[in-house]
Every structure is written in C-alpha cells, then in structure tokens.
Amino acid sequence: MKIGFIGCGNMATAMIRGILDSKKVTAGEMIASAKSDATREKISRELGICVAGTNSEVVDFADVIFLAVKPQYYEEVIAEIREEIRQDQIIVTIAPGKTLHWLAERLGEDKKIIRTMPNTPAMVKEGMMGMCKNELVTEEEMQQVKEICESFGKAEVVPESLIDVVVGVSGSSPAYVFMFIEAMADAAVADGMPRAQAYKFAAQAVLGSAKMVLETGMHPGALKDMVCSPGGTTIEAVRVLEEKGMRSAVIEASKACVKKGREM
Image (cartoon, rainbow, N blue to C red; front, side, top):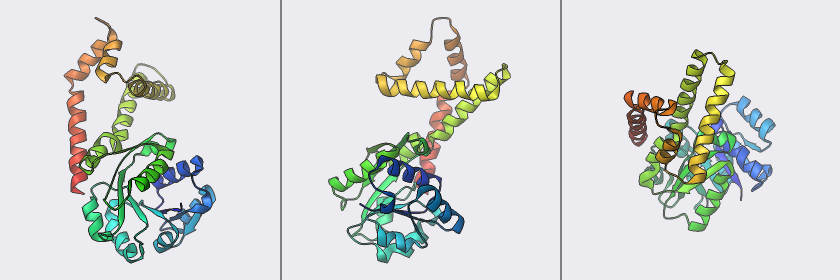
C-alpha cells in the first residue's frame, strides 16, 4: 500500500513518523507535498520519504491519500485534484466540519472517503483519533486505514454524528490539558518550586492520572474519591475547584468547541 499526504505540517509530520516507525510501509512507499521549497527539503531530509512538487503527483502515486491541509484550503485543493482521483483510491480527511456529504459533493459521489479527527499527541505516538467512512469504503479497507492510524496512537470508529464531539473531547482538548498543567505549575512556582521542576511534577501527575483511568477501568469519580481523605488537603482543593466552576467551564468550553467545529 502506498500512502500520500497532501500537506505536511506538524500533524502530518507526526503521522508520517509514526507510520514509518511502525514499519507498515517503507519510506519509498510514502510521498508528501508541501507549498514551500523549505518544507519539501525538510521532508526529504528528516523523513526520507518521496517529495512531490505538486498535489497531483501525490494522487498519481498513492493508494491512500491524506488531505492534511487546513480546513480553509480544502475547497481549493479538492478542486485541483478532483479529476485525477481514481475510484479505487481512499481519501482520508483530518479537518473538522467537512462532512462526508460535503466531501462527496466536491470529490465525487463515486469516491471512497474516510473522515477522521486526530490530535497533536500523535507527535509522541499517544494520539486519539475518531474515524467514520462512506458506504463505498469496505470494512476491510477501513480496518487497513485504522491500523495505519494506530501507528501514532489509538483510533476508534464512530458514527459521523459523533465526529464533531471527538473534536471537543480529544481533538482540541490537549490545549485544555496544557492550560491545566501550566496553571498547576504556576501555583507551584508561586509557592517556591523552580519552574522546570514544577512542569515535570504537574505533567507527570496528569500522565499518571490518565493512565489510571485507562488501565483500571474505574470511574474517574471513584478514582477522585480515592485521593480525597476526610478533612484532607485534596478535598479542600476539590471544594475550591467546584466553587470556581471548573467542571462547568470545561463542559462549556468543549460544547463551544463542538459548535464551532460544526460551523466550519
């Protein structure tokens, strides 16, 4: 299977690195296009894959084509490559708001399309991706693409109605988590801890807590209760977080994110 990327920014680069490290395909079986000469040179130098001077070259080369440009460029790029896409190729999108219907209208009703929503932890092979497909993509093809995407994290097939929810809960949420880590570190610095050390303590606490949720299968509320001793320090901190509206702020932020995604 030959894989192509139209666009090679941070997200695409992370995905390509993961795929190469998995050994599912070789560097010679991958190609990417980019607008600038500098980016193309960087792709060749750092990733060792084939470099395309035009998006059409990616379409000519690949069996699976990832559209990895920003959402505002989708219309332009699709118009450029539409007539060159074959019916046996699979188009994989990573943009919020671009529905399977919207994509089929522009790519053609006879094209195989998979819609995905990755996130930036793919850069450290801990990404989370939601995926859905149109009726022309077979289950076997979907599984093949899913396995490719699991090279840089975890992937789950969801109904298209939940893809925008994926944007809120995992696509954009790393930003919320980074803000939380930064805030905890700021508090530690205020109490005298060196900043680099504060980031390490805060980030490791988040990493370990997330791992507990995933590996124990326990409800997050139950895990929280395990830390909250009667009359202790943790329940006092939880009381203040509740008083300041932490849960409501996170819920409203995520809902705003989903709403924006649906409007794009």
